Length: 358
Image (cartoon, rainbow, N blue to C red; front, side, top):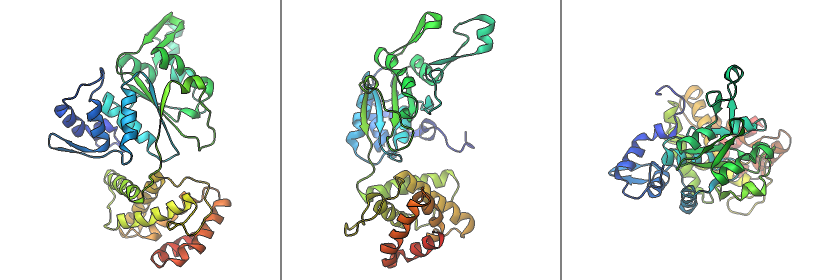
């Protein structure tokens, strides 16, 4: 898979997982590849038998402990938070460390129906031989139950409430009925569900009370500390630059710091010193967006700016992140430029580049 754009976590970090396996002396829940303690080391970083384990999540350790402990029970896990808080990232790495595979995924959308959650049918087989196991097409959830693995449901609240509720029997009884065959699939040990959801985007369907009771909710917040957010963005940008064969100039960390100052002020509605109140744009300006903006700037710098990462390289991507509503957000950005950035000498290049584009 050397030519793939992005490899699954269990392949990318296979050496780390193997090192953790070799040094893991703690008891493992049945069906788990690693013990809960080793899963924590994999997510939060550390060492295993002399091998350095990189941190996959930078943030509150207790939140990840709660997530891991939940998955060791028969209760499902719901990772909740605004867009860009690493919900999918954490979900993927939890699945990789616990089950050894992170690819049993259902992407929930408004068009997701019951057949995409429970099972479908091979209609050629169905018409030729009638309902049978051979004619049945298993979904990722079905396969996870059979193999005793974790199934990931991305953006759970995007699919309709009636489809969401098809999960109730699976989560409570650990069984998936197949009425057409007068049969059922019973989950093997190790099976569980990790779902992600946010309540900021349009098209969100509330979870029913019955379904909510079957999830333990862990809320992943945006980083409170700026230094922590700088570390997250710098680390992920470095990893993505390597995977995309983009050179990383020496000033990446400095530009990330300046970029995040802008993002944090706009999303909080006040300057970092708390002295000036600002209007907020309609977007979230999340950590994930800061990563995307920086990587976009690296690409622009590599191909069109002789490798130099500058405000001019980043400005078009900053505009794309901030101005989601061409009327409202443009006014917000223009006001921010005139009342804040114009007065900062160390941001004069950003002021000039952004003003020209706005």
